[in-house]
Image 1 (cartoon, helix red, strand yellow):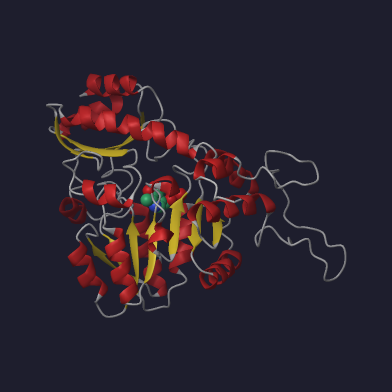
Image 2 (tube, rainbow, N blue to C red):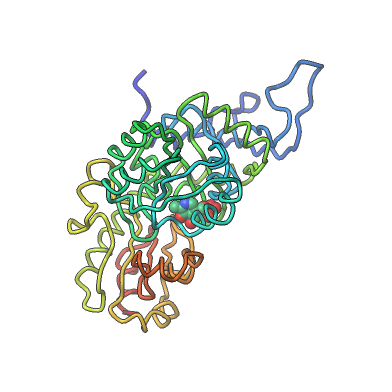
Length: 380
Ligand SMILES: Cc1ncc(COP(=O)(O)O)c(C=O)c1O
């Protein structure tokens, strides 16, 4: 049979999992343990930290749409990233995107460092600089965001993954901003994909969740051990919410991407806006690279206001955008990265990266784009 399109796979995710009743919606198996008929007769489920049928429905869906060997659902995106970093041998150096999500930076600096992992930060949109970093002694992995947070820089993923592989480094792609609808990193031979499933995958700003998708059985075995041994798993109710959100991911992303394009074009011509970072604009430095490797430009925008002194009034004045620090949901959010998502980076690093006091990040939702434009017009 011809493989099913991602829209079909996601719309019907979990629908055929309950042979007893035929329930279309995968049941929430709210149980900690599973009874055995006799010694040696397991249903395949023993204890919900190890595996739970609702979580498994989500994990299998993620593996299928990514073309991976297995999916693993975690309590948060950071728990997922932590589990992956713990697979690296102590003493490993990891080449990592310089403008990483602030929480991932904090994880590298204040947690992973303690178990012997050192990050080497590099502008991963600079392919030559990343290749050089990959040749540094002790480098065992590459950790790259497929679209960076908050500056929306684009890495040439095929080139970087090939360079990492040649040097024997494990490749980890945080695909939170693009999702499997727009980019499938395993098709480019990445080893592991990580997600904050809190964002587009769940899509409704109602759950915190994370995921890892593995390419090979060897990685799956090690990650399954880690997931069970540490236990930062996603509960069945939250797994159900992510699965329910996933069903409409392609539709949501289409509307969000179209709204983002319209809004970015409008911002780019606004006299009070100094600069717009949106890879869908032809003038963005990563536009051509992303057009080559992905099926869309996502729905995140960052922009710099000409007068940073107006930022407090903008954040207080918005009536449609919500001033909050997440992204990827159906509701549009506005964020001040320097004070919120990236507050854990040192001030000089923020200055060097260009995450200044006038940089605002927008997560574009599914509202009517004219309402979003009018809202920004009023506050700008
Ligand atoms: C790109 C990226 N990766 C990882 C995370 C962490 O995910 P979570 O907040 O679900 O722990 C975030 C959170 O904002 C993110 O934006």
